[in-house]
Length: 119
Image (tube, rainbow, N blue to C red; front, side, top):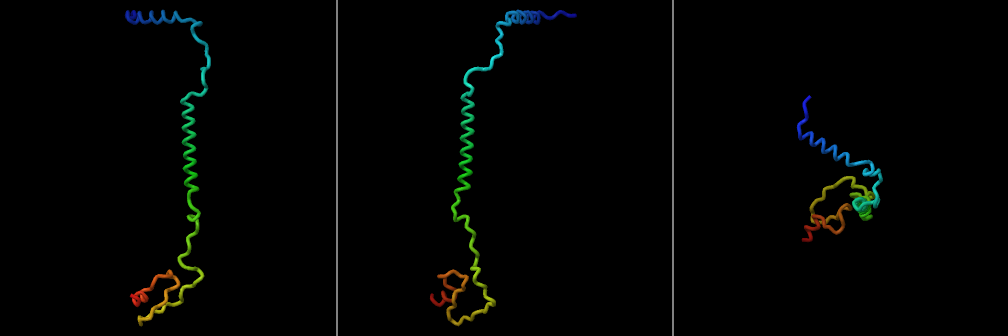
């Protein structure tokens, strides 16, 4: 068996001497950490989590409740359901007499023949 190098012998001797300096009285028994149970980091983390959750809840509530009641009304039909469409359409002759606006056209808008006779 070979002898260890001199550097290794000196390191072993130094570590052994250091280990002999420590005895059972210098070792501290297990004690739970003392001091404040809540650290500042934990308090900040909880406070920021609560703030983010409150902001998210407020954003959801705003989006759900911000619509006006008019937005939820049903869309009116394209034409009045009480009137029936004409059975047949008769082409009108352009004799110069103005025609009446159809019931489906909005009031106040002139028809093409009445606009031609007025202008």
